[in-house]
Image 1: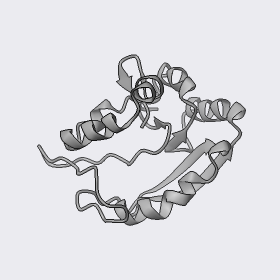
Image 2: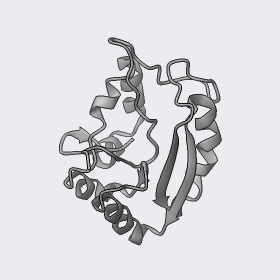
Image 3: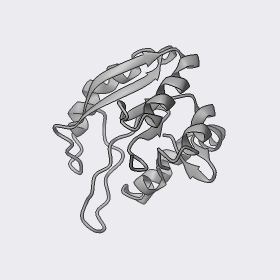
Image 4: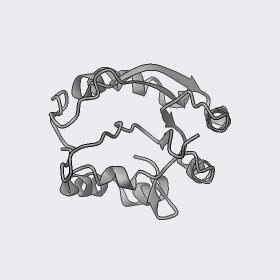
Amino acid sequence: MKKGAVLLLVFLLTVGVVFGVGAKIKLFLPPGEKNPDVDFSGIELTAIHDSGAGRILEWYAPLLEKECGVKIKRTEMVDLPKLREKAMGDLLAGKPSYQIIEINPRFIADFALTGLIEPLDAYFEMYDEADVKKYLDDVLPTYREFYMKWGGNYWAI
């Protein structure tokens, strides 16, 4: 399996896409406004997440589809104690079933050390630098450093 086939997420990751040299994606738009920089029409993603979070991915799925064209086709909710085991087993099996994994931040290092996920830093470079700074500055420093980063890289958003 190629490294980075699946990205570990604490909340939600918008799928990356290749753009022309120097092009940057606008990160902040009013809710519900179609982003002119991205069109992921036809892309369907499957997600697994902590049942304690409720159906949050399903709640936001229509907005994500409207704004970017990407569709969350299925979500699987698992109790937190079993989520790490299920998601890790899926990755290690070599044919991941999930493109979105929402998991407790305390497990980021476990997933990163497998080499089956990749840090998100390079994806931030696709977005307007000022927008990325604004996004990261809006996250409480303790949360940003403790829950999003490990080993000097961002693994979660």
